[in-house]
Length: 256
Image (cartoon, rainbow, N blue to C red; front, side, top):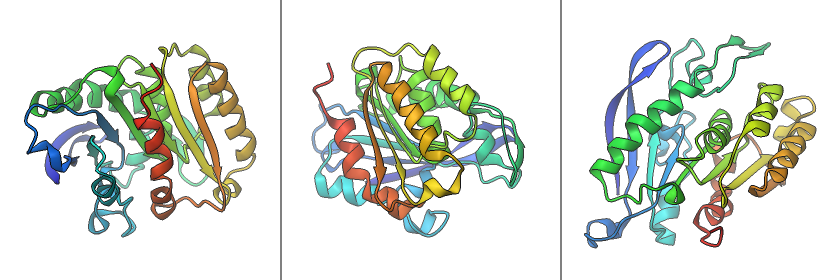
């Protein structure tokens, strides 16, 4: 079951109405005593339904969760659609400049503060969640993948595991490397991270940057799964195929 409702998100452009998507396993209504781990996801409109997805193709998370009977709640928040680079501003932890879009001021910290302080707090009050760090995860792709990496490192007291698909680590390499260097991650922190071999061509030296970030994360003693997806592209259809890989990392119980 997927529930939908609107919230007002404090975006850089002012209060912005967004949709929240919430997936509940079939057992939720049947087993009233059971509590569930929670996966938070970026770009919520692209997670469950083709008709809501930006390019008409979603990740197919509902079908995967139903088929595998994965006992997990998913909370997916819609991103900004503001024409003035709203999504880039909201999903960037750092300022950066790109020729095709110009200068971007990053509001990633404000985004995460709201997700942790408002959205998560409300979800934990309304639903039977396992609200502790060990059972709270986060995932996203592209800029949402960068935000997932940022959330795991900067808000490690909240999230124990993350999946960063095609993370935009090209946006501000020095800041990202400094973030990793300064991060203090608790034991059992786990990360799935990938990048498509085809999309490597979109940014100069992307393979080298991805390798550098992976090496830094590995040296932080994070349980890291880092993959280059053969012939992988920057699109929902490709990210959908990676669901079994990253869900295995999120569900694995042996990190403690």
